[in-house]
Structure formats: C-alpha cells, structure tokens
Image (cartoon, rainbow, N blue to C red; front, side, top):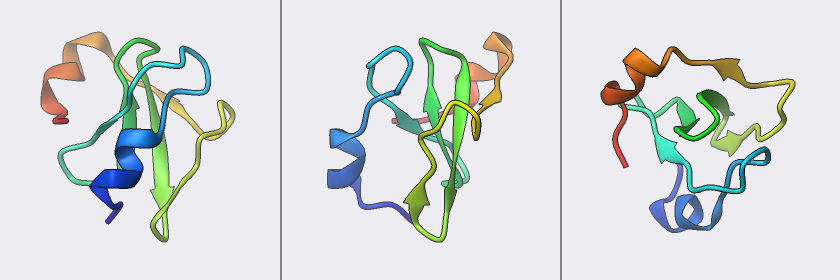
Length: 64
C-alpha cells in the first residue's frame, strides 16, 4: 500500500495532473491521460512504458 502523503505529491508524467489510487490499491490512475500506472512492492512505476490504457467508461471505479 502506498502512503497517502506520498500519493499527494505524485503527478502523471504525461499530463502533470494529480493521480488517484485504484479501488484495489494496485495502480495509480491518471484520469486526464486515461492511464493506470502499476504499484510494485509499494513503489509506483511512473513510466509511460509501464502504464496501461483505461477505458474512460471504467474511470468511475477509481477513488481518490
């Protein structure tokens, strides 16, 4: 799990907008870029190459 204080400091590397934590806590979501960045062993992988695209219809499943 990622510390909420750390989450508040992180931004999307593409859009520079705030990230949100996925409902299951395994990814950081960039709503603006429609990308999900994995969290591995508590470390966010904020590389565009590591990200997966998210369908805009699925965005409602994510929390701040």
